[in-house]
Image (tube, rainbow, N blue to C red; front, side, top):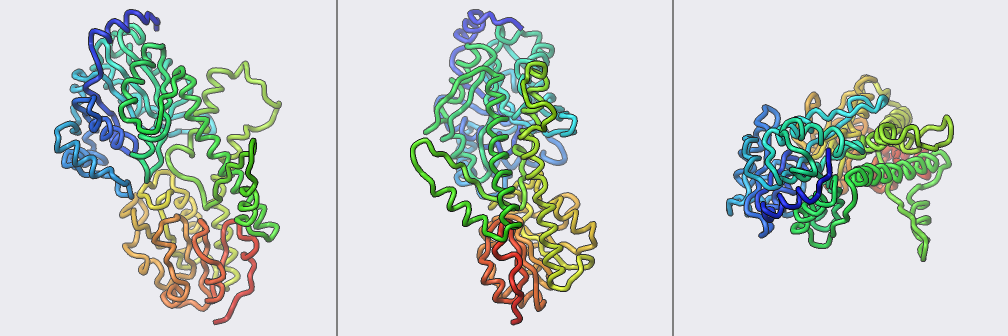
Length: 482
């Protein structure tokens, strides 16, 4: 790869402003991004590229009707899709040859890990997308990777694939950058508009062209330019830090349970200290961490330093990575939920084998349909392994491979020995202790609160055996006969 900036800058100058854009990957990142690009007056046409596969080909027709295939609450998304499709500014296609018509292409394709222990990422889907772009690449085009990737990927293997497939040279003939997504399900449009956008090109011309692409969709946010590798580290590190913060409060919750105190009282006390130079990024404990990002971005960061700086890294000899330890703490929380469930059932005089469990919440995020790496799955697996009968309900999730879901809360609760709140869906905040005990038909039903959703005393008064994450003040309460 050479960096003859003047040549690329001249090609782009002759090509003119970005008018036509392609977005590869019609998921939680690609769909709102494509809609916002299409809504910007600076751009004429946006294509969403989606493989016409058995599992996700249905998205093409839905999107072309202006319908969102995302089932959770996404304020404004479907209205925006209807607007841009009716205007003819956005359409979805499986014809990757249309890439040749475009000025800029972004890729928003998942990058999971095959093996976390060996730091082996699965870039197969992303690299298939990169190859499709490379086969249709034209001089002056901008290619942007939005997927979270191992540091060094953009200027390394992704660049090599594009050059091999196209016969063009990055930095001379086309622009290449990394601009990582920074969105959360449930607020996709708002996040893209309002969050600052990290933009890292392989050279200054690429960074400038990518800035031109993203600036029109930003409202409160601004572009923060840097190198492509720095952008990759920024994305992986910010998710790693969030995972670390969650692990810190989860560990504190476990400590508080052991010491018989309420972690939420402690959290309020810590968070109350305000003033210049004081920062307390206190997040919330919970039943586990899921999603596509936090569960694997730590491993991208770890792989990055192994690839780019292993021989230069100065770190305490023999000590494990703080970030990987945090990841393991968060992975442990479903197992802790299982322990709370087993202990509570024992207090209620009910063995785990044959117990009827109402598992409320399958999505990993409240008020969302996103089930990627849901921590409810390993928890359910532990229950099933012990012989429990599990009924899963989620108001936003209709189906999941290998896991039957019941259509209503009442179906899940009927005859339940234990009720487990695993996701913080607003529907579960209105549950009534008296009504649940009646529907369950149990003298002392169990309730396990993994998201601090219920008032413990209201359930204890109704004869429930209560346990909650971080609720050491309540977890050994006296059982009330009603």
